[in-house]
Amino acid sequence: MFEGLFQPMHLLVIFFIALLVFGPKKLPELGKGIGEGIRSLKEGMKEHPPEQAKDQTTTTETKS
Image (cartoon, rainbow, N blue to C red; front, top):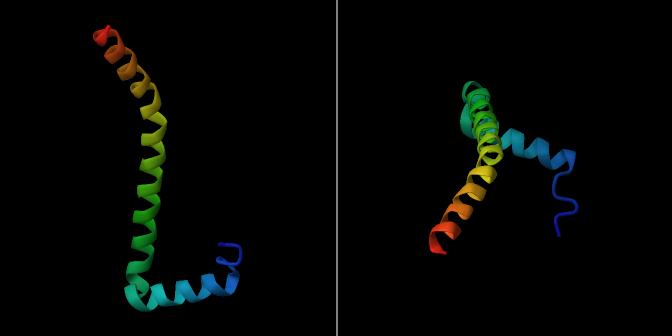
């Protein structure tokens, strides 16, 4: 379904449209913000699984 979606020409068109919409000064700031958001999301995903496992064991212990 998405086989030919991100070809180099498509990415250039998307970049050009983003440049027109946001302007050359805002585009690096936008990229930096997106990068920081993705980075914090990854860090948050790494921290949560052990906490969820603790929460599940404590709730099953309290239910018993």
